[in-house]
Length: 604
View 1: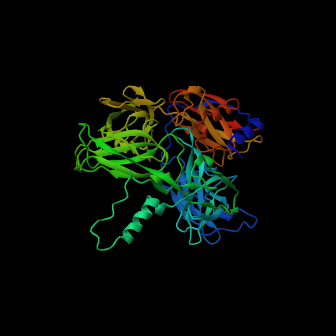
View 2: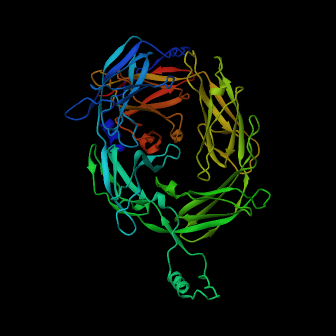
View 3: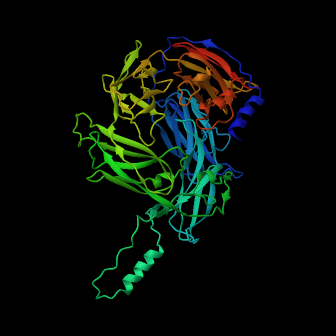
């Protein structure tokens, strides 16, 4: 079923949302979290076919949905049985994994496709309770196999082959090609590859000569004549044969090739496979393509040549292929600041330079300053001259602020999370931990648009929790909007404000007869369409537990809609077009500061 179909199905079942809005006590504190308890989750794992035979040696992982507890792991016995004991009361996700079967969460009603949220159902347990009827059915993964041939048309050993799928980026919201984790193989001596354990879906198959990425200089007629002259020249002759004159010879190199045999990702033909299917005959041929050299001089902030600077290229302005990392070329500037990047395939790139302005940093010393430069280029198979002028990277200093009366959290366990949404590609900004006094420093910040948040870990035994209320960078909102940081900007200050006035929406999802309906996804999103942006803290999704209960925590106060769908693609809930289809079926909820509300949902 396609993502759009899932919304239409939801509409067809008429989605009668029965609102049972009841404000709970605003002062109610979260339950204490215990590391151990007296509950047990047990069950068995079987094959998802007519045989229903038990599966042994399956790894079963049980995780607390809040993330406050460490995962518990069990392995099935010969009868496919497992048991995890001493669990505290709570809600848990149970997942089974064993190759070549597909990783499967408990409660899955369909095989998870690549890029889709695992359609599992959390299990709610009380102290002393034994949930013993947990059955997980695992489907065998699909297979893609074929032959990869070299440039001469002969079967080629040692080529790297991968499958990829399109997924919506949680940063940009755009659909990008993502390599399927575990979906890689190498060709054998017959040129044959075999990719197994794949979930059903649509894939792009690609291959590259990873071990053969060195540039190749084609032999010309002049080269042949020069070799003949050397052979025919008398050994006693004192006059050497002159070298072949002319500019630098053009080079070619291996690049990723996409089935059915194209170097352009836009011309690739995706293949569709079903669960357990073996798709053979996916054959294609490796190709050589004209490559170019990018060279120039790196200059320091004082405009003198800079030695020992790392220079590389990063893809820009195009859909990147999953194996493009194999095309990354790098160089180090010499004593005169000169660098040369060889074997650059056609495409749009940013040429990036980075270097620390000092030596090793002793413990407790101030970090050295990072210098950087970037220049955008388009490579069409011809050599380019690109000079780079280094400038200092920026530094953001900030602090955590508290609004509330609860005991303060341990600042040193809070991770500050900058997310970069625009600017030169290939330049990452690190996440950092705050100091014990709540201050933090984010080094290596590059010009571009940013959001800033923080991760406040759940504390076992805590009687109150904290959430991010707001953040600013240079006085700009950096939580619901994107704050711009400019090149050459002076001191940049940030503030992340935490509050103990947390919010919660909870309820039960049931079918027309009143029975729990855990097979749906529940999505909450703001009524204000201007807040429908990627990575918004105001847009969340969850699955009900086996008892139909669900919970959303730490939403900012405001007006929201809650809707249920049968299926959803990873990150699709940030897509405005997708959310627009849910508006008419959504239940309206207004959430005040520090408010806890109940919203029951019934499908009919």
